[in-house]
Length: 211
Image (cartoon, rainbow, N blue to C red; front, side, top):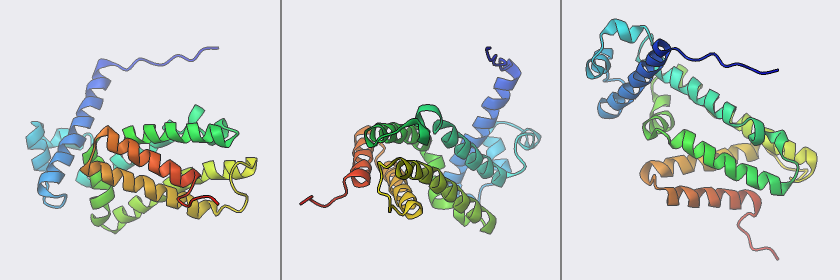
C-alpha cells in the first residue's frame, strides 16, 4: 500500500508564499517600530498589498503572532517524530546521539528566523495577558515534550530512577532557551556548537569532578 501526496497547486503555493511574506514583513515592522506602534497599514504598505488582501490571511496583527506560535509548536512536534521520538532509543549511548541530533534540529528551527525567536522570547508576553498565557503554554508544551524523553529513560533504566522528571525537563529547556538567546547576539555556528556541547555535558556528566 502506498500513500500518495496531493501536489500543491501553483495558486496554493502563491498563497503560502504571500502568507509567509506578510509574517516576515510584520516582524520587520515590529522590530523597527515596536509591536504596539505598528499598524496594519504599515505592514500592507511595505508589502505593496491592500488591507483587504491582508485580512484574507490574518484577522489582525496579533493574529500573526498566534499563527507563528502555532506553526512553531507544530514544527517542533513534527521534528520529534520517527528517529527523534523518545521510544526510538533504548540506551544512554543512543540517547546521547539522539539528543545531539535533536539539538541540531532545534537550532535550525529556533534559529531559522532570529526575528521570530527574539519576538517570542523577549517581547510577545508583553502584548497582553492572553498572549502572556499563550507564551507560557508554549513553554509548558515544550516541558512536557522534554519530560517524555526523561520518563522513557527512567522506565528503561538508563536514567536515574529517582530523577525529578518535570523539574529536570524545565531545567534542560531553560538551557536551550539560554542558547537561543545567546544565538541572537552571536549567531555563528561555532558558538552554537559550543552551547550545544555544554548543554549535553551538563545533562549527562554534570560539572563536578568524579572522585
